[in-house]
Image (cartoon, rainbow, N blue to C red; front, side, top):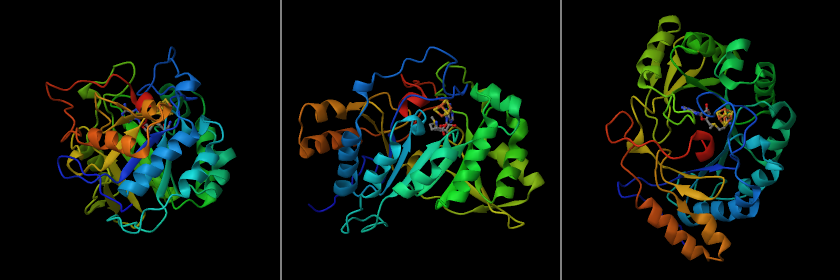
Length: 342
Ligand code: SAM
Ligand code: SF4
């Protein structure tokens, strides 16, 4: 069957699929989860590796989706993750697809808190994982513990070094900045990336925390982040991000690049080429979507690929022009970041 583009009503072609492999996590970051009381999905409701592979294959082989990122919850707490990675790494973008990766393997990436990466980075790489993004919001042990509710900074730092030593095609750091919590560490985090030769991507705090303490006042804007970094380490903008969420800057002294994901103050919705699958097989066309499409039910009721594809197309036909954060009609999604898959 010839590949066909999956195009939404605003003309955006879907190329990127985020798959949450679990809603569970060994951290309790304050901007994501409550300290206690998260109710995990029962195992029977979580997609099996075979179900994930079947859906991923459909997206890649039928629609030319060329990038898959595994996330969660914390993806590395899912047992036997390298087995899934090997299955997905084998997927190839059809030669007749309009994707720039036509005929090649998909761009397979993972987002992790890195707490167990020292033990598994090698195995993940050998299974075919190409790129890795690691969350690190503070370099101060007490602050790190305050933000993640776990005293695990040292393990994460060892995990970051393991990822670098393993030779992934790219290793990046994600740092969520919350005013009054860790905005005093913007320069330290930027400098950390400069010293290790890896890109730090600062993320504006989004209203997806389980406890609902998000407030616009707590968002540190892209403009502020860039101007604070630029005062210490002069920057120039790197043009054109395409569908990538981060705007990027280059350090004028040649020490690499830094990114900011301005989801709140400068949403990149107009270029969004992304869709999401939750751990329990619900298909979402936006992080902030309030509607989900139940692909798991179709799979488990014996639907054939054409039926599942028809539902995917119906869902993509509802993709919004953009989210409404900070507008009066914004409705918080019913599930928080770790449940959707960040
Ligand atoms: N557990 C992994 C991790 O922390 O990297 C993967 C899942 S996590 C939900 C994915 C990303 O979402 C992380 O970089 C995390 O910092 C980010 N995130 C979580 N809650 C957020 C929020 N309310 N606003 C902005 N980013 C958030
Ligand atoms: Fe876990 Fe990632 Fe959420 Fe932190 S941001 S609680 S590490 S899922």
